[in-house]
Amino acid sequence: MTAPATAALEVRGLSAAYGPVTALDGVDVTVERDRITAVLGANGAGKSTLLRTISGLVPSRAGEVLVGGVDHTRSPAERIARAGVAHVPEGRGVITELTVDENLRLGALLGATRRRTDRSLDEVYTMFPPLAERRRRSCDTLSGGERQMLVIGRALLCGPDVLLLDEPSLGLARGWPGRSSACCASSWAAPA
Ligand SMILES: Nc1ncnc2c1ncn2[C@@H]1O[C@H](COP(=O)(O)OP(=O)(O)OP(=O)(O)O)[C@@H](O)[C@H]1O
Ligand SMILES: [Mg+2]
Image 1 (cartoon, rainbow, N blue to C red):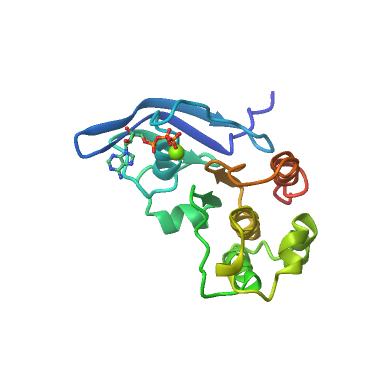
Image 2 (cartoon, rainbow, N blue to C red):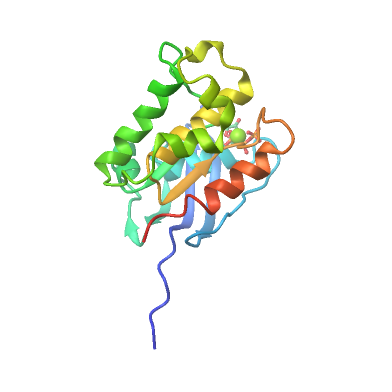
């Protein structure tokens, strides 16, 4: 009998709070490898907090977070990133003083330290042609949707095993959300 495959991400009974405000209360989520899992909920339901708690930006009050079967419940954010979790928060955090190319290279730096150098800048430029046309431009000249493409591309260059996208379609024109999700799910599946 073969053992069941380890989930890419397993969240069990996760709770988190901001001072007296409980934002997560006993949340369970299992993300299988090479799958897209969507978390839906009303404004204020705790979706962003769930992603922040998984990536170590908000401390958990109870529960567990396993990445590839390894317990990272109390790991600092940097160790969780090195374990293969890339988090694209809502709000398009690009470094505006740098060019498009320089921002993407920052993602590739972490990918290189994780020995995932087989993913290249050119693949991101093929996925998002508007970025290729603007690769030498300073990021403060990008539109909102172009910034969203940039932060998704930068996260992909980290070579993640788990990609957490908060509001991934925000600001993207019709056609792009489906296209970028398909790219993230298929062409960027982690190398064997
Ligand atoms: N920094 C913070 N300090 C205090 N309370 C916060 C903070 N961030 C979020 N909250 C509260 O935690 C709860 C969950 O917020 P969260 O941002 O996770 O919701 P969300 O599901 O992502 O909402 P939205 O769909 O509007 O993005 C809300 O009640 C919110 O007001
Ligand atoms: Mg949110």
